[in-house]
Amino acid sequence: MKLFTAVQILLAPLALGAAVTKVEKKVSYDGYRAFRISTHNDAAAVSKKIAGLDFVPFNLDTKDHMDLAVAPKDVATFEALGLETSILNKDLGADIAEEAKFAPYETTTIGTAAVPAISWFNSYHAYADHQTFLNDLQGAFPANSELISAGTSGGGRPLYGIHIWGSGGKGSKPAVYFHGTVHAREWISTMVVEYLTYQLLTQYSTNTTVKAIVDSYDFYILPIINPDGFVYTQTTNRLWRKNRLTRSGTSCVGTDMNRNWPYNWALTGGASTDPCSETYKGVAAGDTAEIRALVALTTTIRAAQGIKLFIDWHSYGQYILTPFGYSCTARPTNQARQTTLSSGLAARIALSYGTRFTYGPSCSTLYATTGSSPDYMHAVATAEFAWTIELRPSSGTSNGFVLAASSILPAAIEQWQGMLYLLPTM
Ligand SMILES: *[C@@H]1O[C@H](CO)[C@@H](O)[C@H](O)[C@H]1NC(C)=O
Ligand SMILES: [Zn+2]
Image (cartoon, rainbow, N blue to C red; front, side):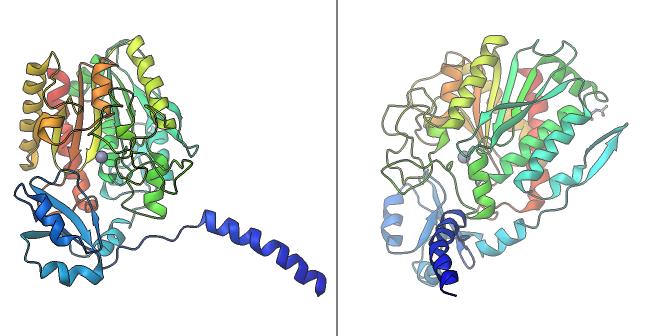
């Protein structure tokens, strides 16, 4: 008995320590109400009014509106302020629970090959299923695709993706490079990037329009480049944005990967030097495992084939953003062409469901950013076109980051239609 107690005393602290570092309590948004507040170019006045309240901010550009989720204890106080608002999520926790009803993974057959069923796009999915989805999709089309990995995340997860080519053979055409889920909570970006991949592969042999597109480019597509953050949104905090990198000297976790690219990184005003900020840039340009890996990948692609188009898929706000983010006056030398194509893309996207996308240079259209991917990809990786697309939603009647699963297919279909314009036209 005495010995037993001694063993217990020795083991108990170890077991407790392991539990503390491993299991973090899931953040509850039950009863949180998400609002859009009209700011009419005076966000400061709104901020002052809501200063004492408990809320989670959503958007960075607050000139026109401020989106936030108010904690249940402060909802009544907030509503009594008389601000001009609309509701994004009536009960954010309830919408998160609804969104977490992942449909089972199913396959179907095309010819003799088993491919993921189109029902994949009826719900969101667990991280492991996303890997299965891409493995199975690629496995069905081995003649013109291969799985790739840019490297590993800080947490040791693969930065996996797929390379697709056409009749010219592997590596023979200018590259189109897409990646998604840079910001962990932007789940719709994962699904849209997967839908584009699905269409390119499954329609290649039967549809002449799609065949012509795939025959013209080598596609490199990475649906989830922030896997550590993405997993964290599923286990712990649905609204997590950054990666999960810990650094010495701070208890705050995570770097904003889209402020970490090594181009004009050191300029001030477009990112934060505070490790606790949602837009924390890191301590040096490209000092995250993910961005290092992606710089290496895109450097290789650039050298081999050149990059025609890069799109960094995000949500939300419905924007097509062209370079640059670091300056509101600097313009690419091919600006006229960028304007023509981005306006044409917005027009094509709108044809499916009337969804309106705003287009224009990133800094002057939305806000200043330093170390963002389009600046790097255009200026350093010399991608002819390097854009950010901020997907649905935008309007005050729909959700924010927690977009209903029923919107996945429409959000994806309108982008696919947009790509059917952009890819053959550019
Ligand atoms: C080819 O695919 C495009 C885009 O999905 C579609 O609009 C078109 O109708 C298809 N053509 C044929 C012959 O199926
Ligand atoms: Zn984002």
